[in-house]
Image 1 (tube, protein in one colour):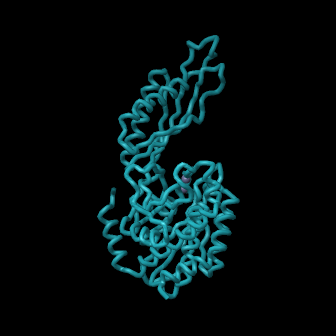
Image 2 (tube, helix red, strand yellow):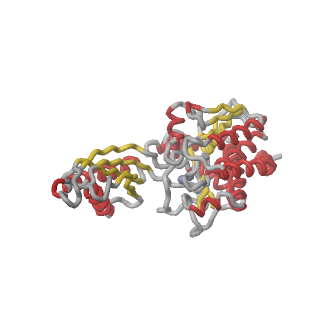
Image 3 (cartoon, helix red, strand yellow):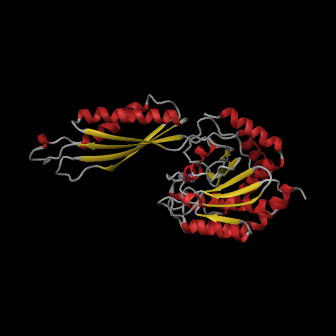
Length: 388
Ligand SMILES: [Zn+2]
Ligand SMILES: [Zn+2]
């Protein structure tokens, strides 16, 4: 039988296990780095397939790595499984289920594979950068190509994820009684509010595709005291890390001006976040071919498609990587991080898409191992695009 057909048949046979596992993870949402239940489910499923599993990889309790095969390229299929405070509103239970089913499909043809498959459990995509930690500790150092797929409200071969930077600001004012002696105080809240206005004024001058958004994490101590200390946190996003950093620096300039105007002092901390996604189009288009053949055309996204950020961006700067998105809702019916998306992530449409995506991912992984010219073309594209 054709290996592609064998893979798809094996994934169909595995459907119930994959759906049950994904559903169980959905019903036990766990925040970043605390995904003990999810990791346990996925490791148990991989072990049941007869795959050797290593837990707590690279010192991360909820990371794992299961692999099989040898004698050729190494392809990693990444699973995310962390939730948000409102549950699985990013649908990572479907990412995990798709990765597991893809690995099951590839394991079914293991004797024919002239390469290694790595099933990598990557915690804390939602703000913890688990993949960055894993890479920095060497957990992906032997990997030639990494792939995953993310649910959304559309079907696209790539997700042009933005680079991020973080800015934390602390304003130090002078406390005073707000009615008896306000002239003795200087308001850390006034400085903070001016900062937000100044950032909004600067927004016009940012390049297209950029974002700045912030929250106040400490707005003052008591209404009858001129606020002595306030704190806020901004995230900047842009097409490149370099520009996201420039925007972060602009935010701190806004803060300095505002601090001076309010007679306060500001403490700034800028931290690098996630890198932008550099999709390997050679590989993404092969994935798209398989997806189309399975009845779900997965075209390149239109310019300016609204997008978020992911630690897969950092992976894509180090190795061949793809991060297609698959539709589990229609535009207008809710998308990632919205409450309604929690339901989409546990719906018949969601699980049907998960199984289809598992097939497309698994066939793409197989092709990379079976067709040296495909891997060579993907490698050449990666080498040419380094640093973008
Ligand atoms: Zn998310
Ligand atoms: Zn997500």
